[in-house]
Image 1 (spheres, rainbow, N blue to C red):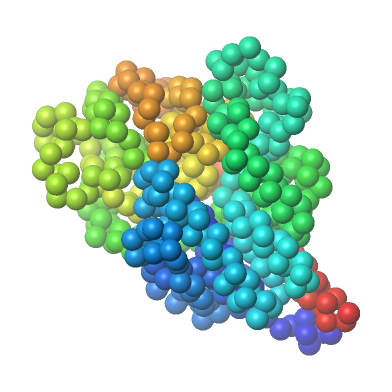
Image 2 (image 1 turned 180 degrees about the horizontal axis):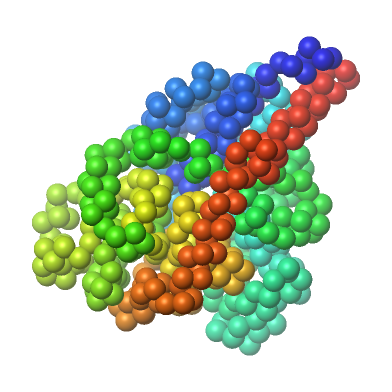
Amino acid sequence: MDNHASHPLEIFFLPFLAPGHMIPLTEIAQLFASRGHNVTIITTPSNANLLHKSTLQKNKNISLHTIPFPSQQVGLPESFENFFSATDLDTAGKLYHGITLLQTQIEHFVTHHRPDCLVSDMFYPWTSDLANRLRIPRLVFHAACMFAMCMKESMRGPNAPHLKVNSDSDPFLVPGLPNPITMTRSQLPDYVRTPNGYTQLMEQWREAELKSLGVVVNNFVDFDTDYTQHYKKIMGHKVWHVGPTALMNRNVEEKVRRGQNDTVVDQHVCTSWLNWKEPNSVLYVCFGSACQFPDTQLYEIACGLGSSGHPFIWVVLGKDDEKEKENENWLPKGFEEQNLGMIVRGWAPQVLILDHPAIGGFLTHCGGNSMIEAVSAGVPMITWPLYAEHFYNEKLVTQVHHIGVEVGIEDWNLWVDAGKNLVPREKIEKAVRELMDGGDESMEMRKRVRELRDKAKRCVEEGGSSYENLTDLIEELKELRANRAED
């Protein structure tokens, strides 16, 4: 038994095919591999290319298994295998259909090899039944933090607080949480306000999670504060915080390579420009990997940033081809020639940028990865939530930790409808000035977020809570393997 316990674990990872899910789960896989365990990441050929060679070659214990994506069968172009490319609901629906068609091949592969553990994204609920049939543990990966998961639980059932207000704009207090959290109904996802097919899927994912061993989270306990224990209490489930994985990327090359292959060309341009700026003087602006605002909203953002008087790096998706560059109606005439800031068209090396001492704020959509990357870098935020759990994340930033300023977004929309409710330049300028002008409150925010950054760094070091959580999880997986061997 002792000899068996010393053998490396065989762990399979199944990330969802979207950057915000793939990147952190792949990095969690690297954590297990760095402890000497054998990791296999299951994905499709096009997505395998996104997992850069340097990431996989860092540890000989990591391997990839690719399964062909049925592009033609679902009516998509070849190599169209990631939600990063989905700019409309029809395409997203085809992608999701294609992912469901992978189930049989994945089940066959996992059954044939029977690993010691299967770590899969929440979007694969059927993997709980697969793992139970094979008598192996399944760990669920949520791209969301525990605070957001607690908020989701608070909005379930016939007594949910949003059902008791008279209008979408009436504020309500979310009951039963460790902190007083205020929201409006308009800030809730559409499937929460009005149950639909997606609501049913959410229930399936929840039921599947309860059949699993527990939840693994790319976060650290000090950021989720009391919400980890709250989640364990209301769900009766185990949770392991093993992040922030962004802190794994310790050198410049690792930060540049994170998530995409094509960011290296922008590295020197970004860092050289930032090197000339004063500490905490530059605002970083990015709305994630899925949001493409209409030109009318981009124009307002440009005007608001320009009027704020603060330099910026602004990442804009969908504007990187030659045709777009020739006809840029989304920018005021002569905007770039004024040298007010830098515009990055396409994917940017976000972790590298946030870690630069010149960055003093982050205008963000409040995606889970962006939020934790900002905290890991000690950068306060301006919150502009859009879809998914973004409004929940905003409340964690502004109402729990007080490390951000709200732009004042009131309406949740699907990612394809980003910019449906135009945010005027005046609101944008006001929020930028509030964070970046250096008032007493902004200085306090900066102090608080740097304290969180220091805690995050301690968590991932040997002896820190995230490091020890991973150790405990590995030991539990070994014990479960030994028990199966004895049966």
